[in-house]
Length: 88
Image (tube, one colour):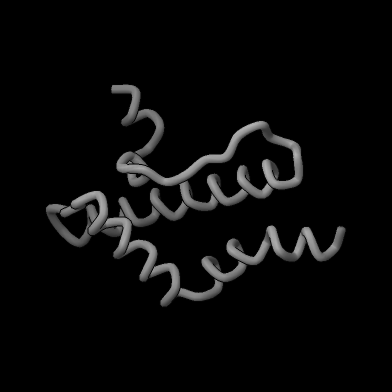
C-alpha cells in the first residue's frame, strides 16, 4: 500500500518541487494549445490558474487510481481559465 501511495504521489512531488519540469510542461501545454498572452501580467495570472488546475487534476487522478473516483481528468485548452470564466 505504501508503494502504491508513493507511486501515485510521484508526479505531484516532481511537478511541485522541480520548477524546470513544471516550466517544461507549461511551455509544452502553451504550444499544444497555441496560447499567447497579451502581456507578462496576464501570462503570470494564467500560469497560476493553470498550476492550480493541474494540481486539481493530479489529486483527482490519484484518487481515481486508488479506486475513489470512477474517472480520470486531464488538462485541455481551458486549463488556464477560472471556472467562472468557463461558464460565461
